[in-house]
Amino acid sequence: MTHVCSPQAFHMLVGGLMTETGVYGIYIALVAGSIYLLADAQFNRTLYSATTMAMFILSSGVLMLDLTRVLLLRESLFFTAACVEDICPPCRLVIATPKGLVDEAIISAYLTILTAVMLMMNQVIADGVLIFRCYVLWGARKWVVIPPLVGLLANIACMLASLYYEIRLFNFLRNSNPLVTTAHHSAIMFELQILVKDLDIAHVVLSLTTNILASALIIIPIWHKAKQSHGIIYKKYLSAATICLETGSLLSFVLIILLIVELTVPRFVVGSLFWHVKQIPPEHYRFDRLFPLSSLNNSSASLRHLSSCGWVWAGASTRDRCPRMNPPTRRWAL
Image 1: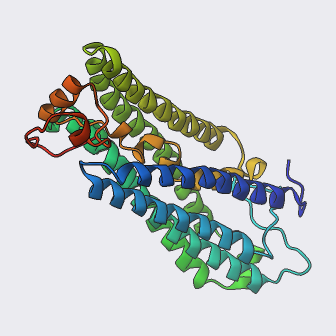
Image 2: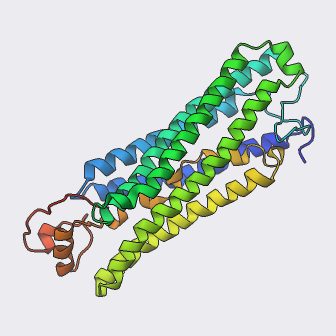
Image 3: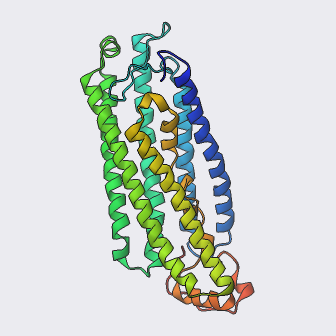
């Protein structure tokens, strides 16, 4: 249990930031590798380069906001163990004034709003890439993408609702009396924080559902093509399916852990550690969103051509390895 005004909460805050920074370091290496592969890609290079850079910029912004939160919130770094329904008000340090605590709460609420906007944009881009791959892999069959698309839209609605309540909480703090707010935990604040927490849980559930659906829809056709192939073609397809399975399973595992923690562990036990873990955008765990699945090209014409030449790496120059071919009817790649 976190004791009143103990340094444990601060240690968890810094530990969470270090965890997020460590994963971000791995993410930078993956982005660099992705850009390197995309430099020679022949299909959808602009699309994948744009989405990769957009997710990288947004992820960097989230990390900077979390770092800013740690640096600015000096007076309310420690949390009391006297939590009610997992809501833990800041303890009253000797150096902390009511106005100082409320001002920091306002800053924190504002940074939370900015973070929520960036995470929502990242979620749309990352899941959009997965859904696009499902669409291409299944031969542009629109009905295939309906389940993950519904999950994404529901997730967006959930995140928008959470953002709405965060804005309400920000406006309430900005217009409140510091003396009253620090002396009594407002019923309105309590209600808004509970609503945000419930929407947090719904967001994790929807993210998990969408990830499982999209992963299955991507792996099934690749595995089916692998069984129909031989030699190096089989190995390439198997490698692509393995990447999807491993990264999809990794994200699902992380989301399940977060869900269990949200439902079973009081917030003051884990402190800010899981706050920072939750701020890590989904593509950090789904590396195949960054890499175009070894640049597998799913266009039927070029796929047959590349298969006959023993290649399924669209990033490699087919001009040097295969006879000249007619342009594919659809210039889509995974």
